[in-house]
Image (tube, rainbow, N blue to C red):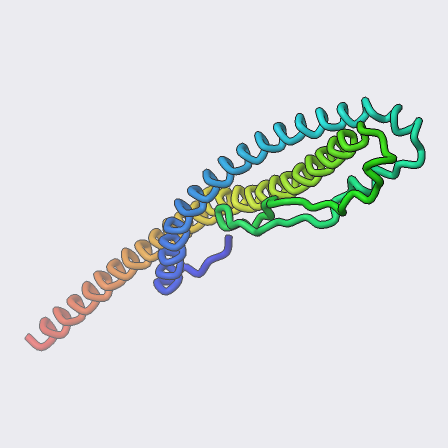
Length: 207
């Protein structure tokens, strides 16, 4: 690290050190908050994955029935028509939060359709809802993890690079300034000795 060994540079490095030491605790606090939120998001994802797998198993069990009734297009009716979310701020990170999902109204005859259709459609819509929730939770996790990575990098930069560099720069500048001061005092003493000797010589010559 190339620095100027001057008093103004010493002040610059001291100011930078104070700034880094002031920001570092805040960054570490944010890191802790994000780590907690990432763990929470991981837990929510595990639960959502289990629910989604259970819903898939339930839907798969009715696949044979649907194959025997090819005229029923329940897949279209099971697709979400709209998904409602809102944005939440978690430790400074904006993440989407699931609110609700709506489906198109069922458009089949209640009289000419087998009674089991309602149950199968409900199962397929439940699976669609689980998949939407899982996707949103995955997005939450990705956003939080990405921000955590950035904060960890910044903490490491401050803690292991910036602050040590400032301290080393301050140490080097202090040593250099101290050496200059010592050299200045030495030169002053030599100059004073020469002046005193010259004064004595003049006095002796005029005596």
